Image (cartoon, rainbow, N blue to C red; front, side, top):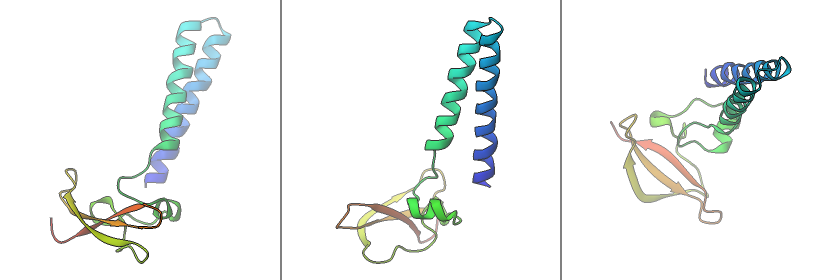
Amino acid sequence: MVSTVRLVVGLLGVGLMIGGLAGVATGAWAEGLWAIVAGAVVVIAVVLERSRYRSEAAERSDAAPGPGGGEPSAPQPPFQPTDEVFVDPTSGHRLRVYLNPSTGERLYHAEGER
């Protein structure tokens, strides 16, 4: 679902940029440049946006997010659970932070009930 939304929003951004180019070509400079910039911002946002609390590996595999938007399953070694636990304000889930001590990478996994 997230990939579909990203695709649709990205296509809208590209369409906005193409419309802006057409506007510039027909002499509507201000409107055309505004549309090009707005479309570029939308495309950049789609490229850089990622789901909350997910690792790059989970994003690339397109795995379904776990509870609270974190990792779908508890991270495995070399990741170690830390004492850091917080409640995600959006989902209400308690998330525990896992840390890879050699790289500093952090992963988040929901634990317990809401």
